[in-house]
Image 1 (tube, rainbow, N blue to C red):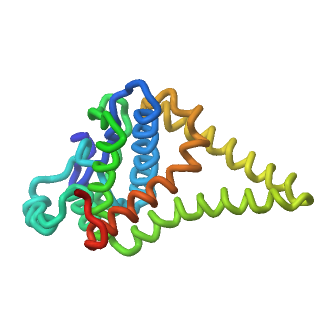
Image 2 (image 1 turned 180 degrees about the horizontal axis):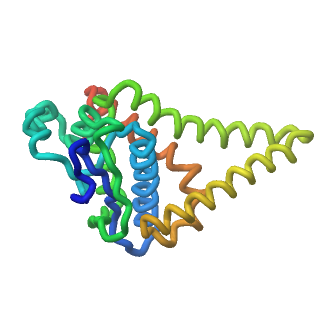
Image 3 (image 1 turned 45 degrees about the vertical axis):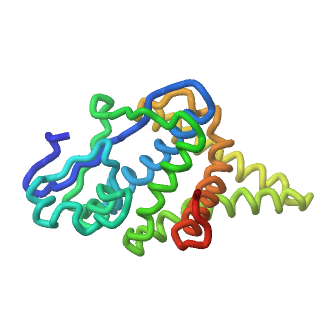
Amino acid sequence: MSLHFDEKTNFVLGYGGYLHENGLLNKYIRCDSMTIAMQYLGMAIRGIPYMGVGRNLAYRRSVFFMNKGFGSYSHIISGDDDLLVNTIATGKNTSVEFKTGTHTRSVPSSGINEWITQKKRHFTTAPYYKFRDKLLLIAEPLTRMLFYTSSVVQLSFIFLWPWVLAVFGLRLITQIIVYTLVQKELNEPGLLAYLLFFDIFSPVINSVIFLSNTRSISGKSKWK
């Protein structure tokens, strides 16, 4: 990670995954983490860094103190590392590291309630992202849901089903190729078989958790 730092680089983003364990929840957590990494690492490579994970993130001490550390985000319960990147990182001062030796592995949630609580905490960061980044993050799951919904609707038209299946198949093949390469790069084996299931339901799961979290924060609904 440190080898990336030069006179221009202030941030280095790495991959922070989770330990491999048995069970569907572990596979979903790992797949979710990998998908998020594909987004934030991919966007950083394209020159639009918008977040990093504290589990694997490097930045200059001088930049940290020059911006008063995490002081601007002390009022939120999660995401200070995300927001430091979102606020200061640019395409010119940010680098990405993929090498397997730099990956970190954290202990995943052991139960569904623990994972939901963790996910809710992570979602508290979203309102503080730049407007551009909010649009980018909303666009991907929204278009994914629209794709699957419209595919189901169009299958009801007899004359359209060959075209629908062709487009669906082309997208699926593209996904398989991309996920195969990413799994190898990020050392996340055993997830490909669950690709379609997770791809369909993860936007729904995340939407439900995000909306319930919003209601809880607004005071309309509180956890007891």
